[in-house]
Length: 212
Figure 1: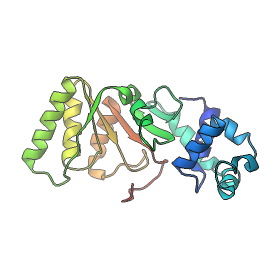
Figure 2: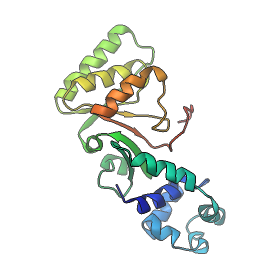
Figure 3: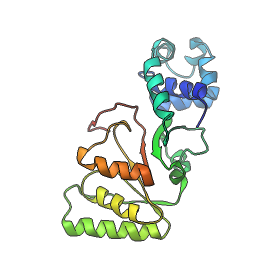
């Protein structure tokens, strides 16, 4: 994870409204690390992104959100990983839209371990959940970290099975990492953070939204 000053620049880039992942990657590709982006004038940036976006990048005050994120990252077991970090999941770099930063709680080394995703119905039958848990335990004991989404049903069963296996489990969530949804899986999330990892691409405080 970068030092606090470098991380603050990464966060400032992601917190600027109206500048999504595509624009962020264009800036990073053109100018390099965020500190170099912010050392460049808005007029120069406007040759890569729109003038309105360039103005937003410098005018938006995100210091309160940056301070909260840095305080969270300073707590034991917490990390914010930027695209340039060695611990950032390398498989995500091969996707068309990798998140600029990831919020992670737990064993970040699992993010680059051999992995397999198990997802399924939230309204699974008891036999379906038992099968998912058994498969996950067997696969985790065979060396695969089990990845799922912390939803009710098959996802939760897969996480439980992964926790019983030697390679553990990763929960990828659609809220801020300080918000657990559904609440019924809060205890499971704590277990995963202690023995595996919980990961989110969304800023702290992001509530459960359907499009996420």
